[in-house]
Length: 317
Image (cartoon, rainbow, N blue to C red; front, side, top):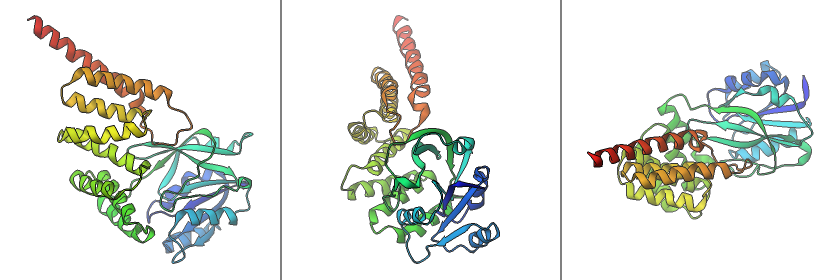
């Protein structure tokens, strides 16, 4: 048993816990499970595998509080955090090799994005998680070639139920609007997503990551549906103003002008996307769509070139 590391699994939904646990078994480490749902099958699993289990049912629904309590409870030198709806899909051996560093980030993938998140660090750093619904630690860390996949809840109905079940966790109604909007988007219920996203933006008071990403998703939906592209330009312009080094935003703006058949502007924005991506810092914790940094804009520039050639040949004829 690797006593140097404790893997801390936070129960965030009622499915996939065993898949998460099995994905970490190669670490051969201690475990600590945090459960605010009071799930009987998880309790029995932990008892059978002699895993330390902390039940937060009716005590707190705030994940930052739960994880900070786990930091206090652990006796290991190193702490690794993963959620029950996640699984390590590659690079687990990198987690076993601890160099002369104190904190490490990994890549967390979901259906739409990749984020870089600090998940492995020395307990002696006394780090604390902040934010009750998107708990995180912002600190310098070395990025490991480790990928964690965040699984979708089993189906559309369960996904909606899952987010609604979380309502008691968030005192702010606007947080619920944000999560429901994301849920509708994941379920491809675009009209409901747009309505809830607009409602969320109307009640938002600051330009944080959630607001900027909702603007981005709204502009993408408008572009995909090829409707109200003028408002799509407005949404994505807000994103670019706040975060100009995001290639995804420039690609979205280019896509809109591509739909409007303004090939010259579209081509220009695809080129900016490539430049912006090359300048983005590795320590940036914002979501990342890798193909939007080179592969996708290059492909679209080729399409623009082809369209321009066809237009020139048509004029000659």
